[in-house]
Length: 194
Image 1 (spheres, rainbow, N blue to C red):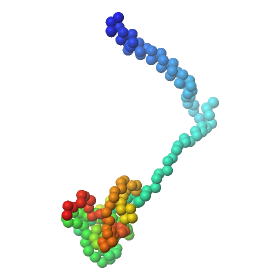
Image 2: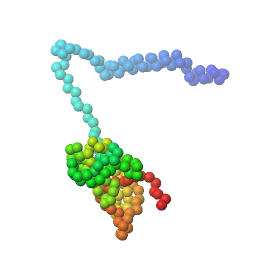
Image 3: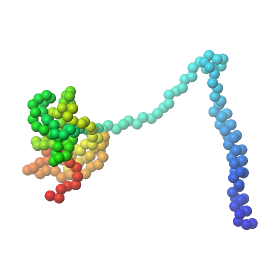
Image 4: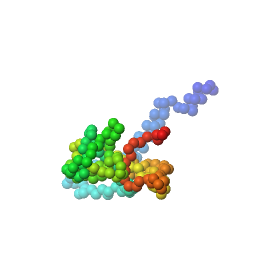
């Protein structure tokens, strides 16, 4: 036998394959219809119509969401230009905020009172705050938070309340200790060569 004849006997022609499929699938679809049963729609109240159909609720498995380790987001305020800061809502002006070396600043909002926002200032002493008018800033939020453990000398970055990564960190020495409490990062980038 030549090679073409062998291939023909091993692989039947396409029209023969389709005929075999039709003979197999048509009876199979009838069996499926018989097994599942016919669907009959009758108007309510018609003879033979069921009075009510009760469908049991679907059962699902719910996996509890993990609880975030830190707050999910931090509200932020970006001044529109250089704006006045106050010692209290509608209080006395104590300074200005808005640009840092010519760049717009964004600061965490630590309290809200009506049309006033108390923001954390990026200046000494650490933890300094002031009040600004809500209309003088653009508000936003950040899903990120940085927590530094002095005892473990590690920094953990959180996103949406969950740890994103951890890295070793250097801390101050006894004569110049690392300040504790809430603060803000003034910039992110590679260390200065100086």
